[in-house]
Image 1 (cartoon, rainbow, N blue to C red):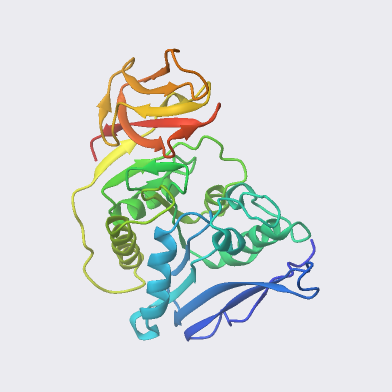
Image 2: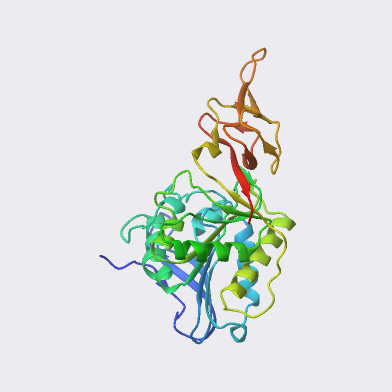
Amino acid sequence: MRNNPIIPTVNFGADGVQHGYLRLPHSHNESAWGTIQIPITIVKNGEGPRALLTGANHGDEYEGPLALVSLAQTLRAEDVTGTVIIVPFMNLPAFLAGTRVSPLDGVNMNRAFPGRPDGGPTEKIADYFQRVLLPMADIVLDFHSGGRTLDFLPFAASHVLDDVEQQARCRAARDAFNAPFSMEMREIDALGMYDDAAESQGKTFVTTELGGGGAATPETVQIARKGLRNLLIHAGIIEGQMDIAPTRVLTQPDDACFHFAEDGGLVEFVVALGQTVRNGDVLAHIWDQRHTGRPPQTVTAQMDGMLTARHFPGLIGAGDCLAVLAVEISA
């Protein structure tokens, strides 16, 4: 296979703190020999556990980048045993544009794995993570939130895995993150996800959904920063006492969790995030935006559960995800 064209300006084997770039050649109309410079920080102190921490896999999600730029500024090598690799803006072109997918090629980073070294910019970045960065890591944290189109209860998540020992490691790391909710997460479309790329390499993998609406709040940023510190303590990379508060454990048992709009229109939710419903209860009305005098489309719950995610803008399109339910379980 061809080598990836990305060149790091940091030395992954050197002790100390290094701030640099993953430099991806990108020729375009404004710069024939241009590059995409993805910021990266390496903090290393001898041998030990290795963490890979990423934000802005989607470019309109901000809690992770805020937590990670703060960590990159403050973490000292003498406070670390092992290695911390920090990439706050994984999909830098999308982050700079404030969009979910890259404006350079229209590709969703979190559906581009394993990537291609000879593909478009997003595929090249995915390939570099797949073949270079992920193999360096023992534990991987990828921050997400709802972006501009979804809003979530703030949770850390792990997945059901075939490897029982790996699943237990991921659950333990998820719980150590200690978001207000801990989710055993079901993906609506897992093909090509970074999650699967990390888990298929046997990594301890944790992801999050921390709010949404295309903005961060003081509460969600604090959850991200606390969880990040907790996870590094859990991994044995930094010392300290974890900040642990009560958390509620949720699971998504099957695809009935997901609810979609059959037709577009003006959304009127009748259930708030965190509220529990019974099978058949009304979740939302969708009003026709082109006519008056017509009754709304009514979307009802397909199961008993708690509303954990909802469409965010006031208008929704046909086929858009309207709501996601989960079931609370004992920890």
